[in-house]
Image (tube, rainbow, N blue to C red; front, side):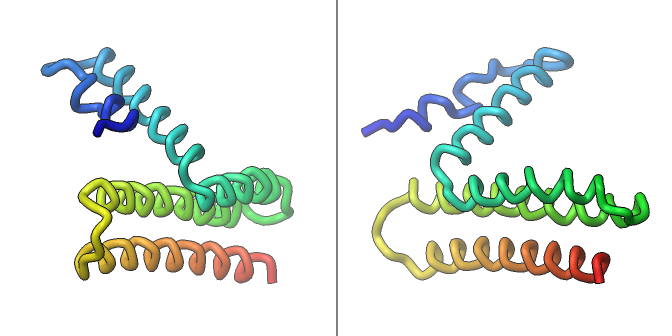
Length: 131
């Protein structure tokens, strides 16, 4: 039983020894595939990307210092980064098997906790700057 995500794995597509510009082009393609997969399969990513599409331009138009703009935008991007990592952890755990295991649950819970910390940081950053 093979699913389509196994057919798109970067390790099976990338030729051994790809270097230089070719490696960068291949890596960029794999990254874009990862973003597409996250968008298709993870509702949290879709919600957070929509939020980012609203908050990033808002931060650019607010009357705050450049450092504050960078902190506001950086905190939003950090949420997306952590959510992508959490989604990758969940995909690997789900790939291993459907049976419940304490370590699988712990890995998923820790990934979720990391997203919560990133969201909290973003919230406190925005509130701290705007108030």
